[in-house]
Length: 449
Image (cartoon, rainbow, N blue to C red; front, side):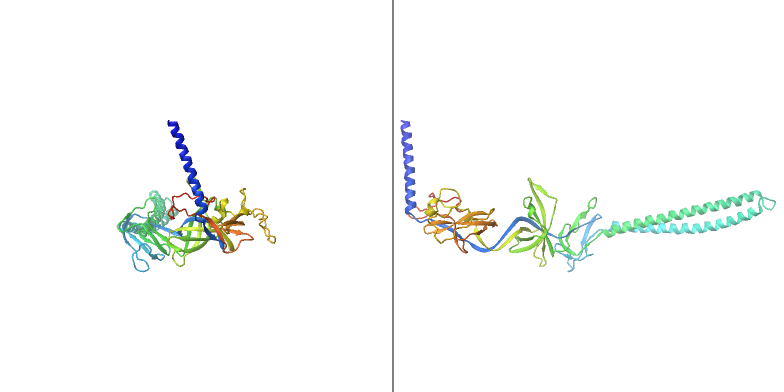
């Protein structure tokens, strides 16, 4: 009993499917005509480019740090008299910030006192050496007279020995005095070096701009303590010249071989969506980076920013121009990819093979010029145009493409020719209203892509 019920159920389902197919076939033949999405073959310029994303960067950025530790007391003034802040325009030598210098001022005063002390010691040593020279002169004169007399009744032997010892002592004292002068001079040099170091540390408490530029980042606040140890803490970031900017672009390794210095570049930024900025390739950095097994190279693009519209760190959508064609016929890529079903093709162009369609011999006109075969190495394709209620193919030779349109050539192609982009069937219900849930049969391969 169950088996018979299954057989009956299968027969009912099969009959239902057949009835639905017959009804759809009848509706297809007697219903509304097939409509199409269409485009046009246009004549225009074609740009073949490599697309990438980059970041707008100042051409030269200087990181201003602190070489001493201390508390930020105050900021300097910019050229307009306002406290240094983001966007401040500064000149070379402009004071950016002042660090508490009380400790460094004390060290400088102490070093200066030591210099004065060492210089006084040098002067004393020089005075002592003059005194020693005088004593040596007197001792030498006494010793010379003693030598003339010699040990005799006129000069006792003890006196002779005393004059000799006095001369030797005076000569040794002079050598000691000369050594003391050298020591005093070295002490002066040492204390002067310590004073120079203390003075330089004191000057480091005043942070000055080394160049003319614009403050693009301020990383400290008044009252904040900076600590300079092995690395100098960063206080300000100055862009030297914002009239010339760079775009750092990450280019995939598959495209880097097509990038050359001096190559024209165009790019847009989200801040000014309607504007196209232009530049040229400056250099290709060789230090590639790998992210998730994808290797990219950084390309520097130089651009003029005399109007100051480009701001640092904007995201740029970059186009590296490879080839630019002028006044060529362009067909939509969708038209080249779409192929209609055979029942929509004119009878003389229907064929069973998957090759590009060709016109039958009996349809050709006696005086019509035969279509020339494309040169070797060029690709061919076809676009479809209306022929009454059916479609007719036109063979074309395809060239470069920008991903949206493709350069095409063909004897039968004309400017503003309407071509088919895809099939658009209106499926209706019993009341004649459009029903999107009714299956739409008969779409061609790639329809609507």
